[in-house]
Image (cartoon, rainbow, N blue to C red; front, side, top):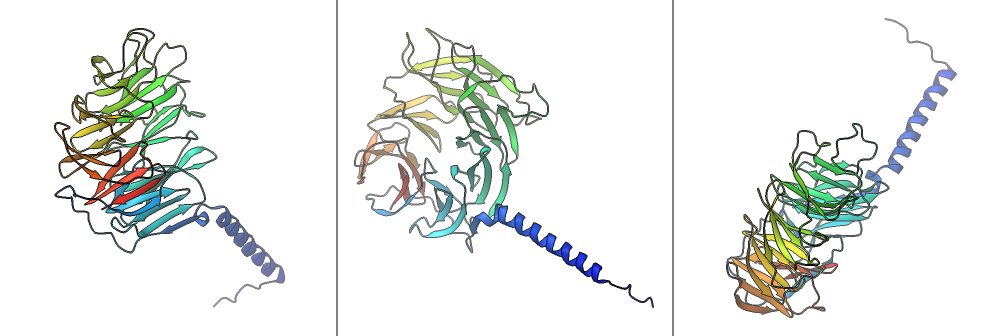
Length: 404
């Protein structure tokens, strides 16, 4: 048997120095890591599955409320209501508002949305709204994560298949595992330059479906807004695949300040503001961005607007009225005046917030069935609404209120 090698004092000193260096390096990495600055408390079990309401309630009473300035509408995912404030994302019991889970970082939230029964939370760092975390809606368990270049402010939208994150100069589309499917607009230090079709454009609005990504942008030297229709899942996520792109010149000086109302498989509906000749209207464009038809709006449209997708309809709040569009053809079906927000579907009816109450409308005709009294501190819109089982949730400014 071989005798052990002789260890000298120098060997011990060197070994101790290496161990100390490793410990210091580990400590520095830990102190500077995102993990140390993150609190993640998951629920022990999934909350009970929500059961769809069979009827609209006769009366409503406030059950609970919570701050949620990082959301624009109440979020429901995995049987929980999710609120977001500062750097915190909290899953709550639908009935009581009791905290079920919590995810918190020392960064500010840019926005939070619900998709695929999950929650997508976007945080701001020195690269913009670039740090994205996906959470299980019911338990708050961390799932996927991603980071990439982004603008300082973004708007998040979910179409059921993809989530879009749009800033003024850059847009990304993500699938359910947060893998990016489209990068559009500004690209810092591109590996392969020249893949973007245009540069220097301001992205005004965007929306998507499972087969189309529609973007309204304003590009240097152009007289009006441009509508671009793309493949939401091209072969190369860094090289957009356009189906068509057209400047919406039209009559007069052209379209300025357009907004996308909805995107279906082959149709994009766009709000076209009043120009020097024509009044406000809805324009329909085919799957390649070609203009098909227009509908002159009989009601005024405010700069304060909101859109909701509920079941078989898309509801557009114009600032004072709700216009119902078919989810497939995006054609206007009816208009309801005096609304505070776009509303939501419950038990086959559309519930629309109005002054001092919630109007219950026939979904197919927009006829008023009755009004449920609701007291609010302010009757200014938008009030966005979501249904969770037999509980009605309203986002009023920076708070979510549960009514049962």
